[in-house]
Image (cartoon, rainbow, N blue to C red; front, top):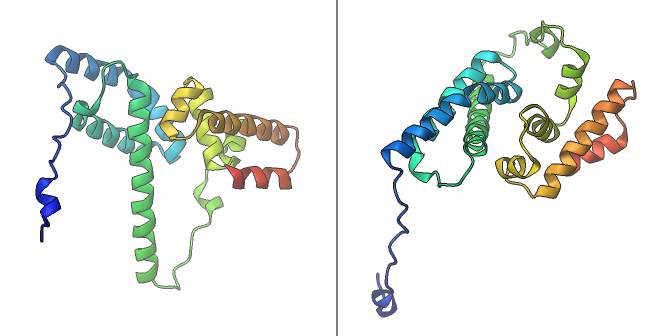
Length: 197
């Protein structure tokens, strides 16, 4: 039911973004293709599985191509694509968690479970092992800034956090890896930092 007031409220049109021209869209697609190796590397850190990472990259590229109209001139393509990839990863993670819970309910309790140690058949180098021992938010920050070469501002934009938060996560990750390399066990300070990030 509309009131007298509702009839007088004017609906404002949605802002119109200029569509990318043919040459701009083609250039953007070329830039996206050039970034596939970087996307794969980031996806492998997120997914921890090469096949899943490749699927994730493909999903992110499909989404990005479908959203070319939302890309704003002057934006850097790499942080935009990394954000699309990260969002796709978290969406897939939520979906898989729900699927696993449904399967677990339906599965027999007599089925033997596979331990995490049995699944991890490959020996990792110490550094890789330490990186994977980091809390996920610290690991993600370290990978974006350290391995992918993004600056703090770009990494903060991808993770949708303030700049200071990104710098703190990277600093905590580096300090924690240093302590692990020196053979120090996790401290209560590490657990507090994990809860804070």
